[in-house]
Length: 334
Ligand SMILES: C[S@@+](CC[C@H](N)C(=O)[O-])C[C@H]1O[C@@H](n2cnc3c(N)ncnc32)[C@H](O)[C@@H]1O
Image 1: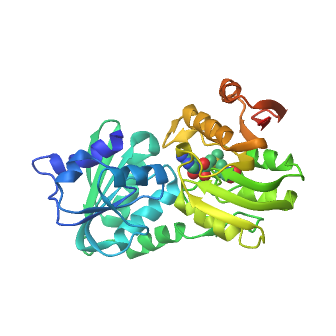
Image 2 (image 1 turned 90 degrees about the horizontal axis):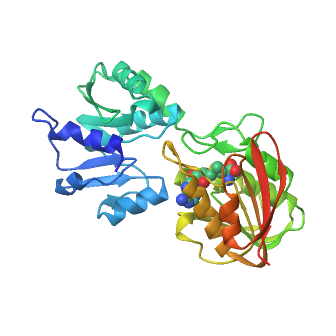
Image 3 (image 1 turned 45 degrees about the vertical axis):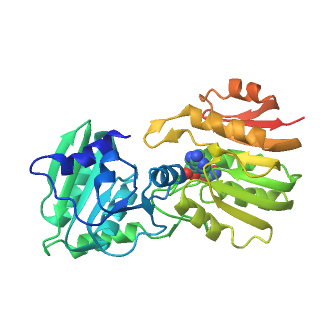
């Protein structure tokens, strides 16, 4: 359980805390045992591992936040535009007189976002604990429609400058092409064929690049945990004629089939924290999902210690290029 979630729940536990209504919506939902005592709380969670944890804990989940709610809880990510867009989303889902409760780590700019929300709502009540802030406001009819309209616009689809790629606030590399992915794409071979998978496919940059480069690919499967990024990828790859599968999927749980080639720029963050084990899990799953003769093409930050994990997979691997920041590794199941 994250400290932000602990702090969020404090808004309801103090003697003078908020009353729990009959129904609540939780944006960026994460399970907490105290929520079990609530009569109904429905979650929206675009990240598959967290959505799975939420459902496994027995809570209801919706694919898209809709309806009107007396209470909207919110645990934003680390992007500024996403957080402000989620403020607007929460407001749009609120019944008249309803309350928004937000919690964030201090390191994610909690004080700054608390100030932002209070600009739109007039005031907020704040709780500071666990190096986080929870802050809440109740709609008394005086909230600034203008400010919320500006924030709502931040949540829309936008194009990456000088490209035709569309992206959304909050997803990986939402305002540029990742330089590591670009380096990998620049080294893609033209001879890949058969079934190919892109693990942690994001908004589809590597998938687009490999389809342009290796024209004999018969099928490409994208596996991505962030439903919003996957939706962008659907849009960004719509012009390709190759058969493409889009899977909202937690790669660490394994893949449903084996592949002739796998491409990836593995994630190494969980929430705010660096998580090298996540990248290592991607390596293990990729290796276990390659057919004999199958190829793995990956890029990683140079300082990430993946070499031992690669050795453990039994793949034949070599570093084919590196620059000041990234290394490219090509491997093969012999
Ligand atoms: C470094 S980014 C690369 C994105 C994209 N391939 C690119 O090159 O722009 C890693 C991606 O992995 C996704 N991801 C993180 N954890 C995941 C998981 N457990 N299963 C599937 N995808 C995950 C992230 O949402 C992110 O889009």
